[in-house]
Image (cartoon, rainbow, N blue to C red; front, side):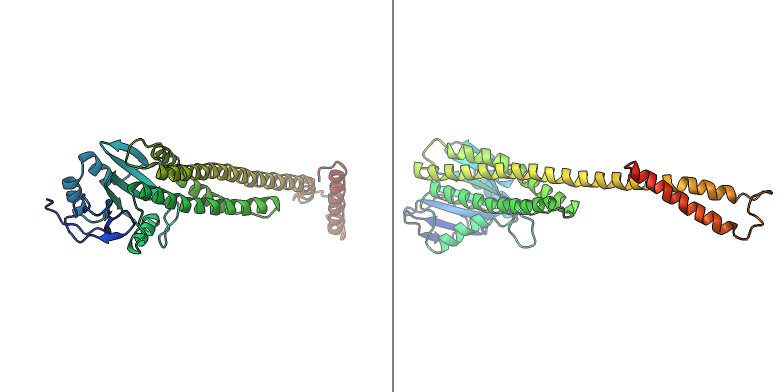
Length: 323
């Protein structure tokens, strides 16, 4: 008997036909009623009472895994149960998809305890199905539906990143200017997602190869298919990351070429005006005996001479293919 009452997000006893009966017992024992296949309790870790309840109800290691502030995707056996940590894209309002949300689970043959800090839409879809009488009929079916929902949403975000990268490549090939910040944001998104998806792929591999009665073979087949989709998503992110690196190299090369071209142009301009500056400086020396001091047309003569010299220098550079 638990001494701590909690208020979970939802709690159901699910029978073999997928009918889910909401649980009203505030102590929330782990065993389902006799007519049900399993019990599912979904917790909000922002509730301070969850820590005490988990310590009373769950094995110590399972409770610790459920309550950790930072998690990494994993799938490990513990007795006849399973510790499973997964990640999903953040589809909550005003959130970035790459800021991935965590989902922690303790799974036994007749009970599923799931917990989250932020809303996980894949688990909410299962909750909506349970409310409409279409809950997963077994623990294994629950795991298959959950992993499919998480991977499907991850795949959608991955495809969106690919489309954005395609647009940038077309802009680069078309000679259009690309803002470096755009590439930087996409690369940061890919890196953040890749950080969790690679260990998640390993966790799904372990889940797909689970030995024991916890997950039936029909569910394992579905989980293996989800695992393959997750693997493709990781490979797609790797490819997107490489393509973004190529685009960044293209931007850097364009910048370097522009700097070189501008520097060369300034050098040519300086080469043209250097002798002109010397000439005008020479005639501007304030000493006696300067030619043309008394001549009324000396200024215009010097101006025309400077212009002719500049034109000749330009033609020399042009003929030498320096311009």
